[in-house]
Each structure stands twice: as C-alpha cells, then as structure tokens.
Length: 181
Image 1 (cartoon, rainbow, N blue to C red):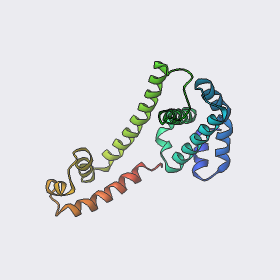
Image 2: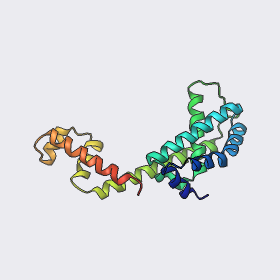
Image 3: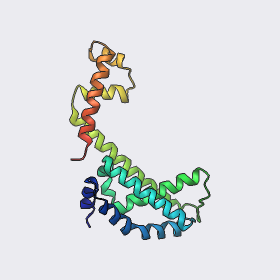
Image 4: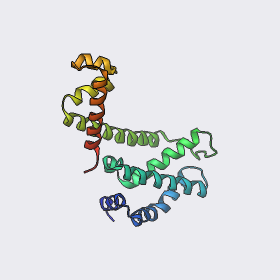
C-alpha cells in the first residue's frame, strides 16, 4: 500500500483505506506510546483513535497534502504525541514515565517546525503566484495590520467596503490555489 494511493482512496471516501491504515499502524503505535509514556492500553487506544480521526479529517480537508513529506507514520505519531502532551498539560492523569529527553523534545519540536515551515512555504508560494493587487492587499491587511479604510487610501480605492470585497475575492483565490491538485 503506497501512501499516495491510500490518500487518494481516502479522499474518494474509500473507508477500506482508513481500515488499512488503522490496522497497519495500530499495534506499533500502541506499543510505542505505552512503552514511551506511562499510560494504560485503554488510554493508548483512545489516543490512537483520536490520531486516526484527526489524520482522516486533515486528509479530507486537504491539510495533509502539504505535510505528507514527513510520512504518514511520523504524522500519526506526532498527532498522538501532541494529544498526549495536551492531555498531560490539562491535568489529566496521564503522566510521563520518564521526563522528556531533551533530544526527543528537540526532535519533536523540529518535526512541528518542519511542518509549520512547509505550510508557510506553501502559502507564500500561493501568495506570490496570486500577484497584485491581491498580494499587496493581503500583505497590507495581514502583515502590516492596516484597516480596510487605510488600505483603500494606500491603494486608491473608493472606500473600505471596496477593499473588503476585493479581500474576500483574493482569499477565495488563494484558497483555491492551496487546494490539492
């Protein structure tokens, strides 16, 4: 089963593809999380199911496409680790058997940073391909924090409502550019 074909099958609504992923990664994930972190098998199963569901939602929404270079297994494990750490921070009774090894935490941070950088690169590329006036308008609004009235003045538009309408159209164009092809 190639990861690309499984992703395509999931996007088409093939539930067997999700079952294949579930079966392929379940035992390894459960073994990893129970051995690395002090949690019960039931808690590990819950975290795995959460990870699978989050992964599936990200595939359907198109978020996974830009992150797939990290690999499906790494992606699932990162979701699980994030969930575990989130639950831990919220005061749930999941405690770490060992304190986070600085090397392990650095590796985890670098995975998150890598994924975040890929998202930013993807958005930057789409923004650059968008061209003016959309690129300039979005930069003024999101990066320079100008109001729509201020942008209207800078870009010589009639008023802030004109900018709002154009901004909406630009965002729709960028969303379309970010959709998986």
